[in-house]
Length: 135
Image (cartoon, rainbow, N blue to C red; front, top):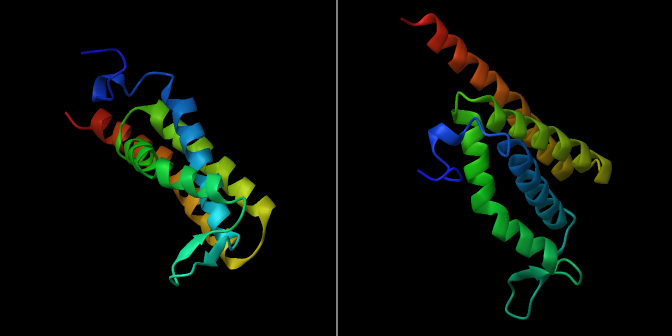
């Protein structure tokens, strides 16, 4: 196995922390670009990004799968680095979301990020405790 493959043996690697933080930050920034009301009705009636929001839309679109993978790994592994990365990324994203606005959409986004920030380390702690207690 390569040292950079994303299998259970490599979930203890330190690079999971900055990876999760960066991926969640990019996804949060992209989502907040859409929350700000950047949807403009196009000629066919569909939604298209407003001027200046194309970068945010593309970042949100491109970060969807890496965010799903990083958050899924951080919430389901029994190793600490992915969980710590998700916790830091979720907390940082929530703070950023709340500094950008206090409307319902911002509060919901921040709430989801804070739930992930709490869920990942709690689940990791529970898994480690369960494996330490079981024979």
